[in-house]
Image (tube, rainbow, N blue to C red; front, side):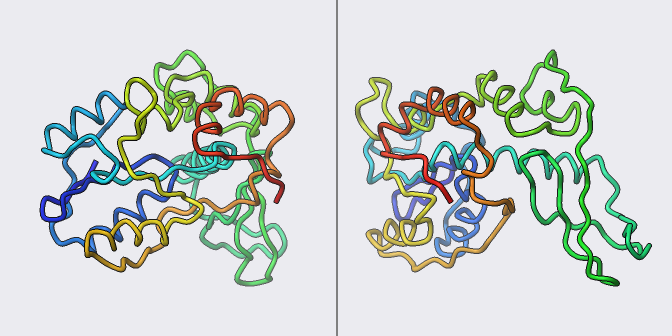
Length: 253
């Protein structure tokens, strides 16, 4: 959680909503923008931190972005798969077509868990890093320990593991609505309209415009290509409050 005393607002980083890019833009646009708290788990914690900062519990005090739940889960999946590859795999690959050795650069994550790299500099062929048949250790205590106990599985298995954990099943409404679930504690921007909504919030405070850099992108096809009927239903059930509160729908790419 970040804040600016001069402009009287804070920014709550909701994971997988462009937070790294948004934070970088705010650091550039707002001179006294600083991180005040590392973790905000729920609306009760959020409200307490607003109190500690001397900010009223109302939307004008804070900014938070939300994202389509079906898209957000795909982004979690791709980030997990790419993170595992970066931390456990060699960054060197040998092209199977021409034998040239080059740096492995992650290009796109497939629903199967396979990774497609950029083209070989020598012959122009693309490379695919297959997933593993190792099984996730579901007895590990944290979500990330489970996901990193083996290469991240296919998307459908990932959804089952992700939604079985208290962190994965946490709705975005649990952060931004008060404990009664009726009052918003922050101005809600849309990930789908990130830069415009950020600058609209800043303009009301005489700041900006901010230039949004692209940080930590996860490259993948449209989220609809990952989902099966089973995963669509599972996400809809887990994040029903997000879908109702923010009016999101599942859309085909």
